[in-house]
Length: 318
Image 1 (tube, rainbow, N blue to C red):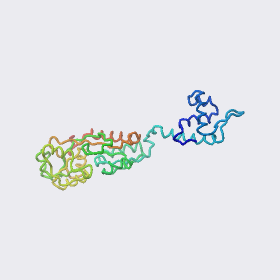
Image 2 (cartoon, rainbow, N blue to C red):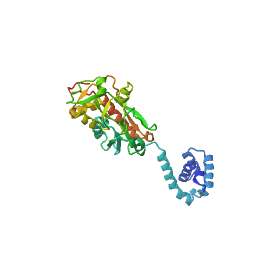
Image 3 (tube, rainbow, N blue to C red):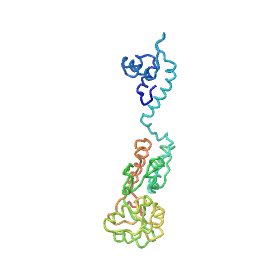
């Protein structure tokens, strides 16, 4: 027999039909060939396999012992190829037990995740979601190895490896937060005051030293004073609650902290940029039905949050 690379694998489909039917005409009909083409294929198979394969007897064509032994293995091989080449199975969330792993900012974890998990308890109760902090490894290795399925919440302005799929998630207005005991800050601040105050700065990724606000100030030949830098909004808000510093953060996050901590909302200077957050996944899995479903859920609940009005301490829409 010839080496596999020299064997016409298309002939396996014909061989399965011939050995199953033991009849050239019926086998030809089964694979949509003419009888003469099927006879020619049978001759090629006999030459390549060095075996008669089908022998005429008083009861018609009968497979040789070798051919009979080959048939179940050929069927298994063809089934395996068919399964391999078939489109991925549809993802049915209500029946799935999949655990999705998301690397995210605490904006997603605190503002969007609770509503998402509550929804899944009713619609996909066996699905679980695990979250962890975004790291450089998340964007460079863990997405490709599937240790992480999705990254949610990174600022659009932060550098991301070019080969990854980065898509817009939501855009949020930003507002300032100050401690309730901070008498250096009123209900609003102008640009001059903003640059004189000390700031607790948030970064999506450890090691990043600027964000959209710093870039906005730099374009005006201005900068702000950093008293601390964190990768966690809660840590930043707790620092602000006990110091004279301020933090600038997404509106819904600021509103949440005003309910939890001794901090208050402060209108920022005109022109403070919005924060545009993104989702990131690896292109290897762009056609994974489960990941596409997860993206749809994350986008839906993110959009619902961004469109919902945030209220100030007096209960008025901001």
